[in-house]
Image (cartoon, rainbow, N blue to C red):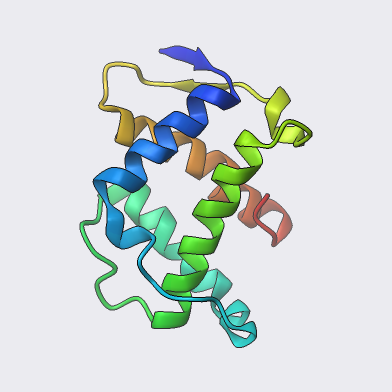
Length: 120
């Protein structure tokens, strides 16, 4: 295990997005997409624990929400005044970087949503 900071977490998520470009090729968010946030978080949860190489039968609006959540998380990790800059995460450094990124996504998106109804 390795404890990482926000800079390293951002690098890991960027690696995940480079390895899986389909995660960010979903089109522009529209207001009604936010009704599909729970489906999007469910997709992320399944992707983290079971893997995914496509969105499968996930709805188009939920796909756009997934993209939004991932890019928002990446931006928050990189923004100098973000509260996430202070966080640290334990990742399994024996796994590839894109798999380590899933740990960050789980903590900051899936767990956060399950506890508060809102991803960080």
